[in-house]
Image 1 (cartoon, one colour):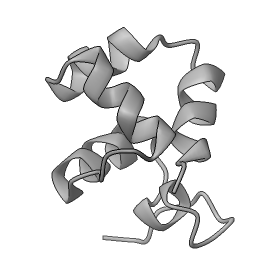
Image 2: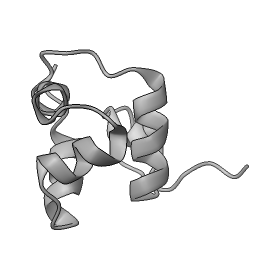
Image 3: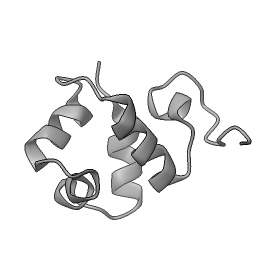
Image 4: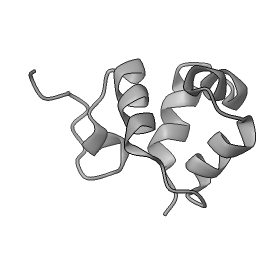
Length: 72
């Protein structure tokens, strides 16, 4: 399953795969595989991406079209 939204958000924020990989503490190739859907994304990575982009995890994985995060 390709995670198009994490790629789109990265591009919208003018970030490279390497910059996001650095944020996540992983190699660029690992991050590239997350975007392409050839590697499962661990929940802790989804949490970091959700916080960074200020969107819900449900939005990241395509379960909703609403970007807003749920109130804490």
